[in-house]
Length: 256
Length: 256
DNA sequence: ATTTTCAACTTGTATAGACAATACGCGAAT
DNA sequence: ATTCGCGTATTGTCTATACAAGTTGAAAAT
Image 1 (cartoon, each protein chain N blue to C red):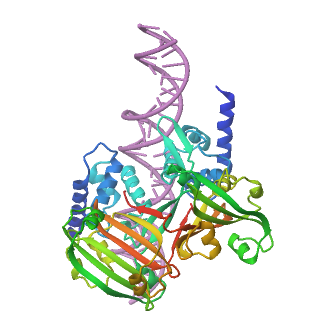
Image 2: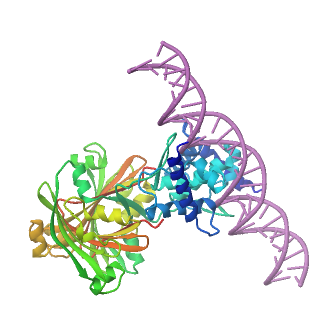
Image 3: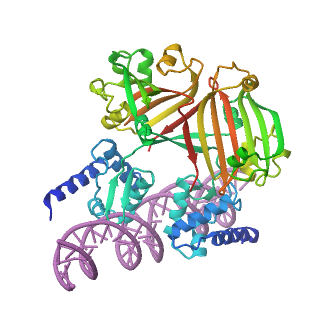
């Protein structure tokens, strides 16, 4: 055999054995922990090949399915990548994906123990303009709903919500009482959200918006454009505008 | 037995069998697909209990480990939740987690086929103020590095980067040439990022910042405060300021 | 009526073995 | 020299079984 390669493999296995925590956690979990530790500590570097499942089975004295589960789960979370017939490798991250939890604004305010109130400015049925049809993935002239709401936190305006809705997916939209149930919650009930996209920008408002939000015209605002899908169809497209000093997004990643 | 309950369970199993795709994908994958389809189509509703593993094994004629894998993976992605001794339930999403990919700004600009340039305004070693020490999780007066950079895209200023760095984790920070390798990339090499947090806000700039970014003082800016950890220790805390009309965040969720 | 015990059911983990699918290098055939 | 085929190594999936651990409800004991 190739002795230098054998030595390298053996040192990897030794590093693995050394990093195995002594807890009473399940074997597959301890193995995952040992592998991520070795990567985080720089002992195993990006694109380096890990010992094969068979070698780990031999070294650890456990079943192959257990080793396989640990490696499979680390692959699912992007720590490793594997190729059938070739081997398992340390993944080299090109980007860090940060998770931002997007809540219903009413829920978020309630969680802070504050009172939530809604003012309905517009709620009407209209025919889709070319631009609106494009945003909803339908044809120009089809029926849509259009709504404009202002959300208040403790009687202070915190978000201007401008929304168009695909009428074929939520035909009773205009009959709802949005002072009781927010559009987000209602739509998620009649057409469960399966996908979505967000575009976050910093903008300044026009006079109308500044007036509605009771802010100075030069105050920076966080604008979120959100589109949501339900089974491949676009349900709604919303523009959420919030004063920068009252609203922010918090995201995190890691903690494996 | 309770006949009404038995009928319900049977109807769930029938819905499952009906939703099984006819592809040649692995069994566990087809089972996952059938379950998510039933949930997305509203046939199975939030908090509803699924048939037990044993019942699925019986109905599908497959091994329990295969059923278990499908249910376990759907639990990991938040579609289901399970409790040992009780059962498996459709998870009711309280929030949608949107993924925002956070790239190195230089990489992002390069991906767009544009030229990236950096101007170094400040790069010095200082003693941490109380506030700075708090942000880095160290003691006041310990050595830190402080840097201020301006990133240009096609010679237009696009981001002001203000950063403090834990000197004990990156002792050679001030010796680097950041016109070649960005602080983000350098720090990720000497102290691999294991965790991070982001705070996204819309702000207006002061005269100094507006001048550096070559924008009007009333132009809205997107401000990202980012802190990153390497093995439980805070490596760096950065404030990234970008003109709202030039920079945005894009996030998505779904596509299972 | 209350408490205790226990059996049944559920999910969680682990094993040993089997076969399939993919990749790769080496030797044989051309 | 080039191509082809084949064996080997590797990961991917699936099965059957076993035992552990948590929950629940009903029977039994008090």
